[in-house]
Image 1 (tube, one colour):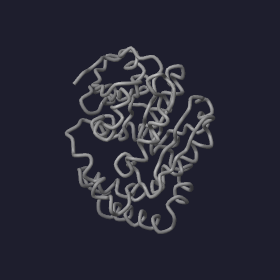
Image 2 (cartoon, helix red, strand yellow):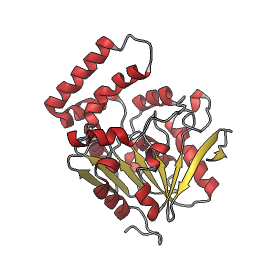
Image 3 (tube, rainbow, N blue to C red):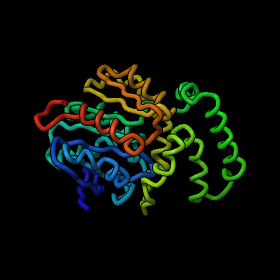
Image 4 (cartoon, one colour):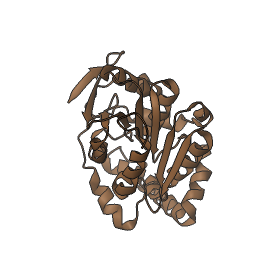
Length: 286
């Protein structure tokens, strides 16, 4: 474990893997830590230096004042890590909630952000503008299934004391919107073992996520962007359309019959797309 200290005196844990042009990885969550993607992204270590870190208030990184658990501050942490490691222009690879951090990074530090690879993410976390596009992507059968599971949570769990089973039940409706093919569900479920982590930032980032809407800011992100998601990942299908409609220089790739974990569900296609997009050792894209 390697650490560095931010400008506001928060110690963050980070890891570097591989050799080649630097790619900074932003994991999803808010309950995840960087370990969840280290194994998933191992194939990229052959061609790129991957930089992972636990966000402030999660994993092995230190806690911080609750007012700093915002995506803007996380983006600044990322840039301070870049400066600490001595990298110039970097690529940022983000999955799920990490996309908010990556987009904020491109907006706040445009001169350092050479390329963005956004995997299964969206520019908008606010419920109202997302609702109808997500329902359209889900279709009637999956919408009915999600509503049934949500009703079960309200009836059986919503009034109970917070616990691990209650949290699992709370996120179950979201699982319907992200579900992989039936034959891959066990593989996806077993891919990330339970890790003993501290996630003090989680409730604060969830609230921040629910307020965030970057659609109007996308036109200011001028670097090349890869938008990659699975066709079964309804929230991100809707989000991908928003990204494609707002970003000046984007390439969209939809993986057929894939859910929210393309690295696991469709690794061959996913890593081929990433390698074709990310810069090579001489600084150009392949």
